[in-house]
Length: 59
Image 1 (tube, helix red, strand yellow):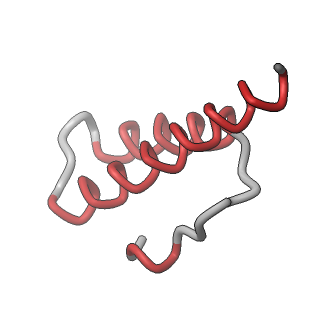
Image 2 (tube, helix red, strand yellow):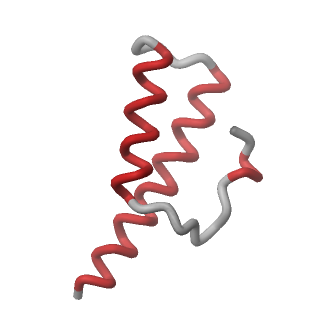
């Protein structure tokens, strides 16, 4: 996953992103390569944004 592949304001839910993060860790066998680390970091940033968005919507 390149940095350009994560669109700002993504429509993916926090739950979907969490599933993708978990799947990445499973595929990696618990140790991330440099490429996987970049993918992980992008997913976590997107997950955090989605979580904040869901909290704002709930309020």
